[in-house]
Length: 136
Image (cartoon, rainbow, N blue to C red; front, side):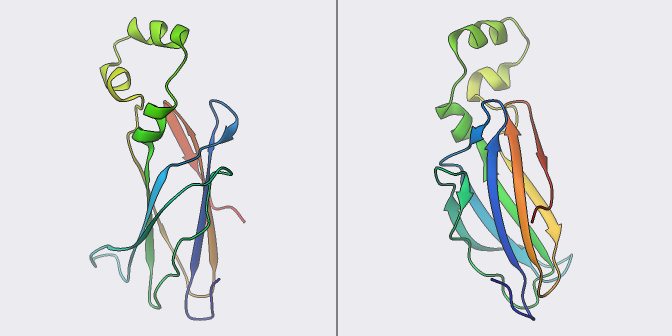
């Protein structure tokens, strides 16, 4: 949890195409202390059966920006659409989706943080889009 001098981050993913948590999505947590500084990878995790990363590391003191990188391509590849969906997609001009199962093979969310605050950042995901917001 955050202290007066640091911020903390948590996340979860809901696959809105099936109305269930997205399990086994790899997530990286990166941070920097200033808009022009280099990103530092603080840790990697994967979502559990509830779509949550429960073991993201604490942010270092002085962190001003955070990036969550979600590797969605492998998730969608392992949760391939039904045969009827595959046939419908084959009729469309969507070679990237047919090859990988994901239009967005990765999602990177960057946000600013302030010391002492907790940031819960849910990702609502489907094969053709995503939405993110600051939760509680």
